[in-house]
Length: 341
Ligand SMILES: NCC(=O)CCC(=O)O
Ligand SMILES: [Zn+2]
Ligand SMILES: [Zn+2]
Image (cartoon, rainbow, N blue to C red; front, side, top):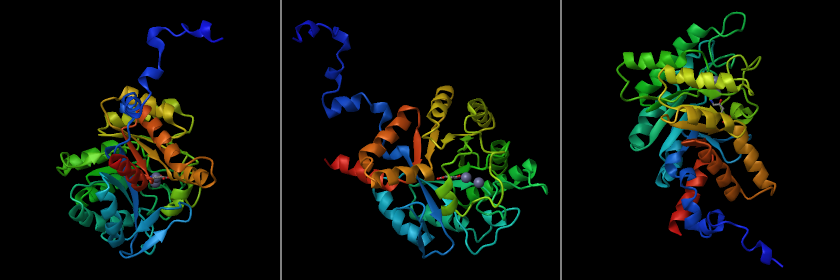
């Protein structure tokens, strides 16, 4: 008999009464909603304006020449896309010690920015700022002859590249290099050029030396030719140094912060958001996370849509304001469908 269990739940401890239909469930979850404004879409731009290249390590993701990117983005913008994060990828242009082609006139991002601004006047455009896709050694900064980071030269160069993207039309510059002092260097240079009111600075403040970047290095042709990035990207278990990195970037003038990757770093996200509630916090669902989820769905571990929405809502619940994800076009499709119901 269940009789004796009848009065076991006190009045205020019934939870079912708050969640028995979808609207009620949504009300319990409003702060973790995923809307178009919460998504930023990373795109790879190549030199040949009329080419599309598939990326074998990232099924469903392509690199686009600017004319092809126009067609692709036109569709996604119609579905509600609000922002993109642009990466340049070079093939025939040369790579050297200083990453000369990061901001040369022939750089695909420099060439694309004015066109993107013209074609998509309501789209907010962020540019990843780093040297690794453009240096002969594939590291994110300038190196000393012994292979260590030359930090002063690196931040001078990174700031120059950020300024070039800003001048070419980027609304947001997003340095991912992890050199010490780059946020301050970029902010000062932007102010010097009177861009303090029109260009925003999104810091990859907590970027870890992760195992999840593999497919991206193939996508962006940015693999280091020797060594690894452990001397400048954060140690994976380094909670304290990650929080110091966020604090420093706030101090140096970042407008927005980031935690990257995210799946294995949600505790860091939570702490960063709790410490800096007044700053928008971005998370980057990186290439390895993208591909891992894709492959799991392919193998029937779960259905892509409900599982991915569960993952994205968990990032919002943990404090993410914006999620940078290669799944953005697909998610926007789903969100549109939901509104048509
Ligand atoms: N600055 C971008 C990366 O370092 C990697 C992103 C990814 O793996 O998707
Ligand atoms: Zn880099
Ligand atoms: Zn990077």
